[in-house]
Image (tube, rainbow over all chains, first blue to last red; front, side, top):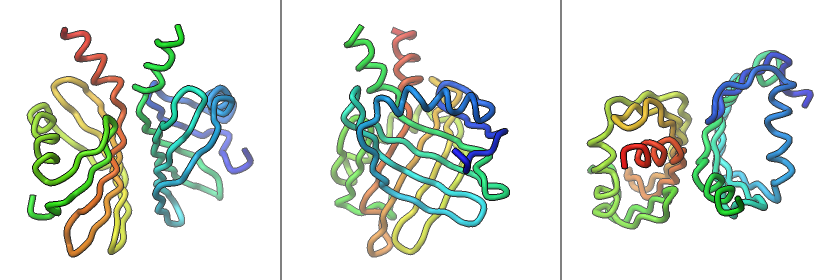
Length: 96
Length: 96
């Protein structure tokens, strides 16, 4: 996580995440579910990047996502995360 | 729609859309709901583009989306659309 700024801001579907600790806490449960990720498209320059990728998790066979990332002093200071929560919500409801 | 190839393929959250007619039929109800769209990030080259934008619709105040687009002979022949269906599904359930 050395590439993540201490004061990173991540705008995720459910709201804003502030700081590296909160960001780590946000990612941890997802990484536990993650089986595989595949980059579908990516562009970037010195200051920003835009990625589209698909994820395979134990919950959902295809969970595509996009991230717009900005970089300052070689660290990620902002992420706008867009992903389809619908299949995850459906899987959780099915499991409940 | 002259920039859309007749044989466009669009992989949308709910499945594959094939051909310009089907793509138009897919977009029409969304455009009826759309109040405003704002481009958040965009990259591209001669053959492809990756966009992130937010939409304001009568259903949902913020419906962010991403599109990976490929271009052949000056026309869009493929779109991979990723957006968060959750707020739209919640709005429809609330209205039902």
